Amino acid sequence: MLNLDTVDIVYIACGITDLRKSIDGLIFEVESNLKLDPFEKALFVFCNRQMNRLKILHFDEGFWLYYHRIEHGRLKWPLTKEEALAVNKEELKWLLKGYELRTKSKFKPVEEVNYY
Image (cartoon, rainbow, N blue to C red; front, side, top):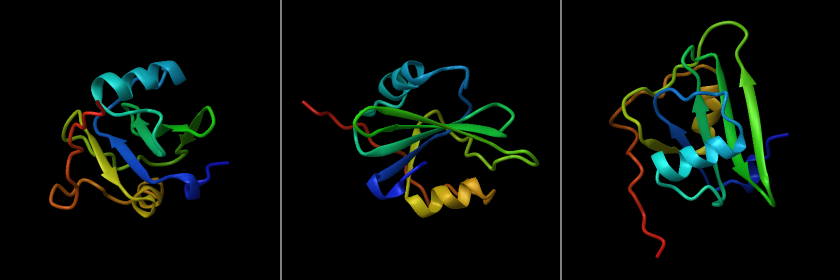
């Protein structure tokens, strides 16, 4: 079960992702495309082209991969850029319930951070 208490931040990968990717493929997406550290206390959320399925990558003593499928309707997924948007846990819950998160003024793209 997904435990949001151990998570500091949630990153929404804008745009569509090929959800045939497993844990290793999504780790590669986080590192190469999002330029983020997959080992941080965060959730990395990816959506498919039809916007009815998503995968959540989470590191907690090992990698967890969560899969969520909408039976009726579609997610209102942000499609603006190929960057990650940092949102809080409550906003992730809103997204999973079908609420809109495409407001440009509310979210800021994640800035690239050098860990060296």
